[in-house]
Length: 496
Figure 1 (tube, rainbow, N blue to C red):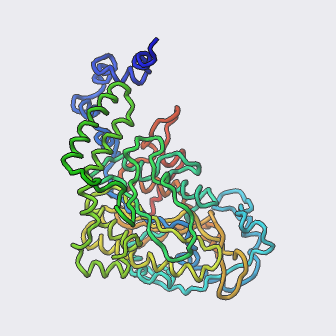
Figure 2 (tube, helix red, strand yellow):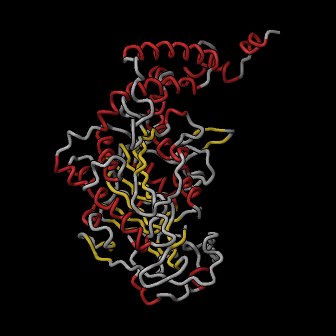
Figure 3 (tube, rainbow, N blue to C red):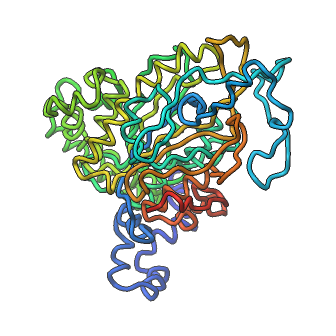
């Protein structure tokens, strides 16, 4: 038998159901749906997503997610521990090592990374940085964050976040996807999938990876951290580049004009439509939509990236690096511009926070990179009336140990990975301002009040967007997957 003809005659169950537009499947569906919803069900994926969510009235329309990759030391920035000064170079007590990672759990000695598991001593390294109370709520904050100190009354600060993973890539993957192993959809993809796009000319999920001035070597970032995993690829994050074209192949090649590209896309769309009719593969439709988005981005992205229309007082607000492409300051300004254009989920990755040694040399640089831009972003959104429906999140993958990694002196120390506690703050859409949640022990080592797991944090983010984390699911390989796996409780203390 002719193999080409044989392939054409193959029909899977999915293809059969997909092709039976006038068959019994459609008749049964029509009996269950109203005429309006039946018409919507046959529309585009974004319209289908709009039916799925929101599940209840949202407090936020969009998210700006600021990810400090490498794990900032919480006791040098947000988690003030003055009692540690008395413990300089003393051994961390065995009772602290063995304490439950959260109230109610069974005592279990902490896991160590291979970087400190062979140390003979675990000497305590108090922070060398001064803390002061800021804002009307009197939040303790490090001298390394003077600009952020001016907005603490707008923040909900959670000092008791904890995670499962102890190494960078699994931990970042866990925060992003709810699982340590790669392959599941990222948070931004889940949100785009659940709510659809608010802008036809820009992707619903955009990503920037900012430059940094601290430790030169930094943890690698992989594009799978903003991928769609097993949900349709049209919901993946689109990364903007700092050098060259913001998006690869944004400009037409020599000899190609916009009219010619339009005619090519129309021809390709017809071919894709025929292939989709034959195969029924949703990725074919997703690919066609991505081609169309790329065409529209040729006009919308240059306009987005052109900050010449920003007044000088706004540029000054974000600081001296705002005009340097790829900096965290420039990325924060672009994030506000994306929010204005109703991009659903914006993510900025800032690397270089992995201070295993030379923390006093590197941490101040990292804080200078992000301190003024973070504060400027909140102030800028607030003065435009956009903070009410824009959720801003500052987070990382895990915390840092109170004991020193390597040699310890009065002026030099490093800290290892610590999944038992770290600090996150949230602001804007539906978040209570001036709230502090959770508390750690005197060593910033174990949580002693209100533990918040990563799944709890992600469940709360979805809730603020009007999405029930238990209902936002996608069936794959015989089971329903979700961002929070089978876990997650709302952090009601921060919900306004």
